Length: 183
Image (cartoon, rainbow, N blue to C red; front, side, top):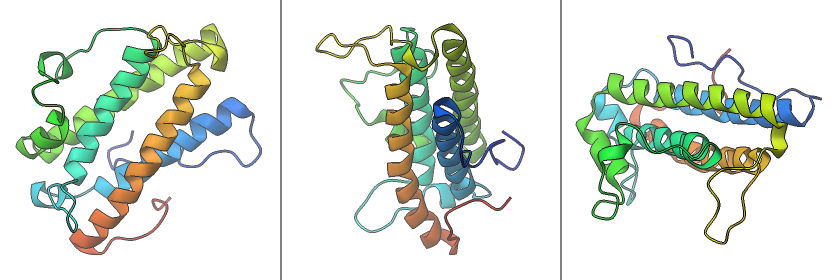
């Protein structure tokens, strides 16, 4: 990530192979979220729309958790690291959403950017090992192990859902609209 929160690759290739298309799609979603959350103070990152309690700060923290969970936890079977390792998820299942209000904008952006960097590294390792067919070490409750391909699709879906939330919230904060970050 660059200093202005733009992703290195903001668009999937027009005619790339499966791996490049999946990674490009995920990077586009990441870049759009970064753009929608960029340049805001704590009030901007804490703004809500309508009846929803979702904030841009909460989205950053939630997606940092999802990045770590999907790639470090599910794909590689690793135990959670800080800050996720000390949370009592049974007592506070929405901890990341709620606690984001206690974090500074700089902390939220750094948490998310660090999680994305770890994820990129882990995905590169998995692609070098078994490619998109690499199976997750942590299985689903029914015992099936999703492939890296499926995990990437699920992550793209997660970002796409939340980027829609970010669109509405950011527009309510300062009128910023658009589908893609400026190049």
